[in-house]
Image (cartoon, rainbow, N blue to C red; front, side, top):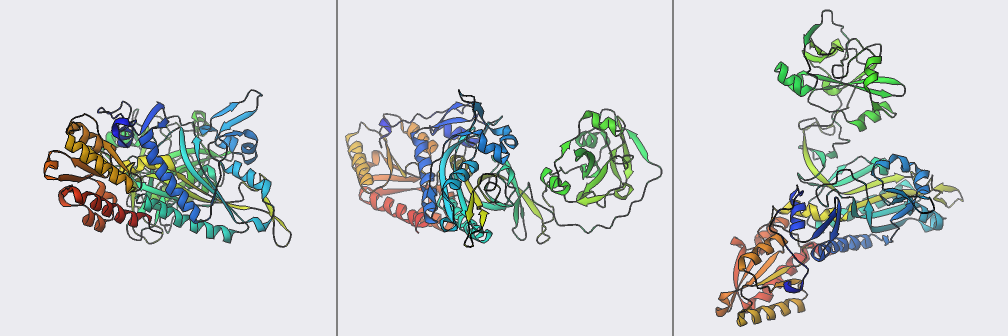
Length: 589
């Protein structure tokens, strides 16, 4: 492909509103074009990258026997109402009515649709197991889309759904897909961490996320520094404490004046104490009663853990709830509320001495309280894990990593098959619900993940299997007949050798051409300049491309100084050798 004929218009300026590096680079490099907040067009260069990601996913799905389908993007509400998700997912759904007044939604996910399809055709155990997948545009009404392709309102996902006669069969397929995902991310050059995860609105009892460590991500996971166990901070637990608790009511309670000071941060400054010297009291309503959750001042309540503990829905208390129990919002505390609320404490409260709690009176707090001066009904792991918390598997310490979710797999069971009538007849003639699994990959998000991992502002690096072209051929002076002719000859040789190449044949300065090469992120750059008079060209490597490779391969393939001079006769063999070596690493079966 000749640059002069390509749809490629790079920008020197950082785009307004692009707060993360991948968003900026993808816009500046003419990979995508923003139509509106969270809505993007893939331009020729970006679509080449997208299709390469797409192809690898399809190849690995084919390998495990999955069959590709394409489902509609517009769904009637009835299937969603049957599963209850018409209400529970309302906050992210694009809902509308057609001209007949039928309630519709733009496809947020496709569990309901694929289950409906299977229910119409699969009737017997002889048709199972079955794996169906699609790569499709999804829509979510994100209030604050950000990060470019990281959190968009319209995005591309791969959904695989599996259908089984038994949990044992699902377990085998789950393991196969797990391994397929590892292969996909390895081929894409993405080092992922697989973590135990919360199933969320998709449902199911078992799920794993495939995360990449990056500050641009919106997720976090905890990993034990000793045994390597990892889990999303949404569900990561800490080692269960041996509780030996006996209530010791306090006689004289010291109360201090804290005018207009209610948050822990404010109290830390006002009283010159540490966050760990405070116990926060959070009031909830659940099942017609009040629950007061106590947690150390440096920690936050994990709603998922709290829900599991309570075994029912709950909500934060409102202004009048504090009045009903004789307290004040912002100054609530456990002492004096023993007969009005159920008091439960996170493990972090156990053993604390000389702590500060709210006094249930505006502008006042109690000080010099010990944990056993509080009437606590239960101690439970209710906190979001922090660095240094104790791993439940081995007793080691957790380290928390910022991350971006690229894949998520679920064991759904019969969550969708039962309400949507997807049943089969087993060998004994009994009718049973089909057992299901669900496996997603954020296809378009992968582009941002790769850029975030390996690039810097204004300088992009793609991995071997995702680079839009493998070689950029730069002719320094296209008006020089010898430079032009040699470049054209090399260009044709590379094309005939099935090496993807873009030839910068523009009448631009060398500085502009090199800057654009850096921004676009092509792995290799072949420079034809003045040295061609001595039959010499220069082969340059993307400065960060080595980071995408196994360390041994990077040392073997990439020269020191990231460039090498070659005789023209050596160009094709050298590039083919690098390409063949990398292809063997990433694509050999």
